[in-house]
Length: 486
Ligand code: UD1
Image (cartoon, rainbow, N blue to C red; front, side, top):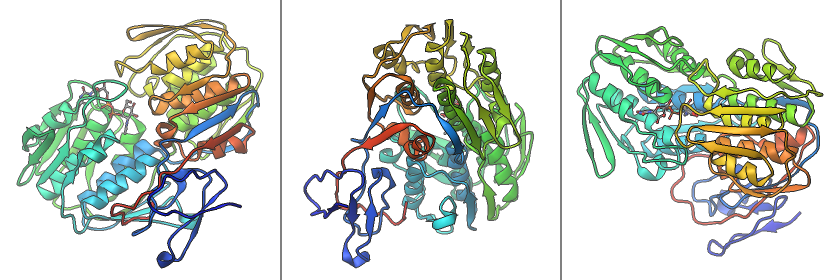
């Protein structure tokens, strides 16, 4: 075993398998470096891990066989953490995934004055958030630019504190992604909005109920305004709402906190505002996108994989589409099994809001289409620029032509290993799947994108037979002021 001692200045390359020695004043703890993002951030520690430079090296060809436990849904955990702002009592959340976006949200809440504790050992996926002493109702650009879902604090902050200052997120890799619908909705609830210096500032003595008809279906917009409306005076009716399971999960948490919500999961949601919300304990739903990603990986490697702790009813559109392609999937109450030996047939797909085919599964499905017999037309309806993985897949031998919002995939083409680069979270997942299918060794760069939303993906894949390893380096620097153990 190698040990690396940080002198706080030089760039230190830490190979996986090394141990990082923390300063004696915090116990001289040794942290194993299996993957850099797993490092803990301690107050006054000399280290903050950055996995910006990490790469995956994947040798394709192994079938995925065995069991994978699906983690809690990142996209349900993020609004649930923001919901803690609505009360001065502790909110305890279970099944929180250990992914970078969750760490970012913790940092955000801590920067506002919240106390965020993480459980240890068997309770490693539990977090307790206390927003008793919120002093700084602001989401700074540094955090919002790394995670757009930071805008989820906008509604809860105005509702509880009467004021919020949230950086405008700007564009991102997959499209413009404005937050105008969040802003318009808050105005409908009586907030005064000012936009200057790249920030949105919302103020209100107390929000009042209103009628909001979303111009377009927005997931985090529905969540943001649902949270805001829980503490508004009177009734709010929201129409054309997102119906995603993550919205329903948030409503379940808010209801446990004392909110009065009807219709979550349908396109019309009614919220009767209350004076005060209280603390609650809530278990986050399983991650349907992580589950779907493993399903496609199992299909394409000719494996026999059982996914546990998942919710097959949230995967209806994907399962139906895969069955159309000739895949055999067996679903039980909280597990899914995919068995090998499928001759895949091409099938067109169009991404839609839930319960339609999720845009977050489009990139992974594209890899499947490269291995199916015939032509698949993939239409991306939700985001305008979500085909960046196509170019990387072409470099690996796929036959894909992108025409605006449509990608035409002709299969079946063998995939060959190459050096490729991640461009966003789900695109990264597609490259991992492609690498598992390709011959020889693929090197995937910029895996920090995948670390945003997939918990220990390389360990999970390795556990079911994949040949995957993380290589990387750590850039040590003095910790800014972290007060959480992430
Ligand atoms: C959420 C998910 C993301 C998923 C997406 C679509 C989280 C944290 N993220 O993102 O993984 O890919 O839903 O299922 O839950 N729009 C506007 N104005 C707005 C808000 C959205 O024009 O104010 C547009 C967007 O640009 C996009 C469409 O509406 O074209 C849908 O976006 P939205 O549902 O808001 O996505 P997110 O909630 O950001």
